[in-house]
Amino acid sequence: MTVAGRGPGRTERLVLPGVLTAEQAAETVAGILAVQRADGAIPWFRGHHLDPWDHTEAAMALDAAGEHERAEAAYRWLARHQNSDGSWYAAYPDTPDGVAADRPTDRGKETNFCAYVAVGTWHHYLATGDESFLDQLWPTVYAAIEFVLGLQQPGGQIGWKRAAPDDGGALVTDALLTGCSSIHHALRCALAIAEHREDPQPDWELALGWLRHAIRHHPERFLDKSRYSMDWYYPVLGGAVTGAAAKERIASGWDRFVVPEYGVRCVSPNAWVTGGESCELALALWAMGESDHAVRVLRSIHHLRAADGLYWTGYVFDDDAIWPRELTSWTAGSLLLAVAALGGDEPTVQVFGGERLPTGLAPDCC
Image (cartoon, rainbow, N blue to C red; front, side, top):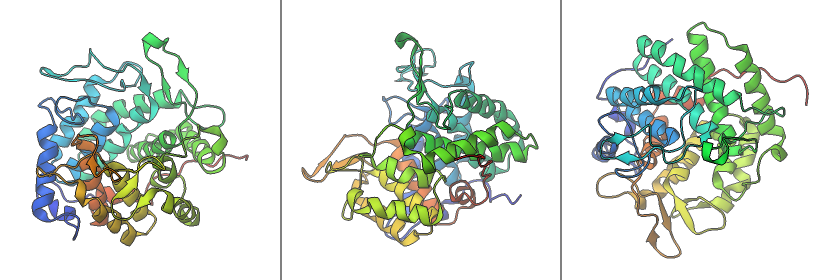
């Protein structure tokens, strides 16, 4: 396996004309580092909560920037705070004494939040070649995937979450297309780790095939969230829908969700564009070979950039108003990852390009 260059000094992959200069890229990386706590946790912003998915996305951006020690600290935080059943809680507070695992603000356990550690772990390994790290994080990844697959339904879709104990701790079997598409991506990365370790997981391969089949062919198995742009592009971003089907899917929703001057709507028909959705769409466009469109989308959200290099979460263009007034680490992280992919950063290309990730086993029925 070819391993990408290591250590600092890789920010050249984070320069994209009209999107980021070298100086701007350094400011954005510094902005995420300023949000990260000494214990490795990366909340949305200082004083706000942390969720495991967005924490991981920000950590991946740090690896793309060559900040490998700080990214590793984020993954070590996850390993230390994993629940005994392989899950994490949905939200942890950013408190003066650090992010307190014993005082989560949302005790629900969302499946796509829990699975995403596999994506970050594989990305970090590809960025560093650190076999020891991979060995040490494998039990964390394994337990997380087992927890998630324990909520897979007979139709292949995966239940949204296990509710908080105060709500009875019940399994919420309703499935979200966006969440399941993210899990599809995470399962592929988990299988890549397993293959690299020569530790085959045939049950995961079957589960991946059933999940992909549900995403591609059975929209009725998911809650209808079609107003949300994430449900539009995430099947492509997560690698479940590819080729001509991906292009057709993106074309079908383009005019509904993309506002050329401002970015991508979070919810249609609301006049609210968001940086995270815009950057993720750019990643999906790049993955399907539409790099020119991806760059145009990224250029359209430059108005969300703040003086400190971070990015506002969203903008209501009918009112000419930044909303909410939040500079989120994960918005900055999503931008850096999109730029890294477009710049040819090999670990990011491998993780989001999908060509070198396992595909699982196709189900033998329709």
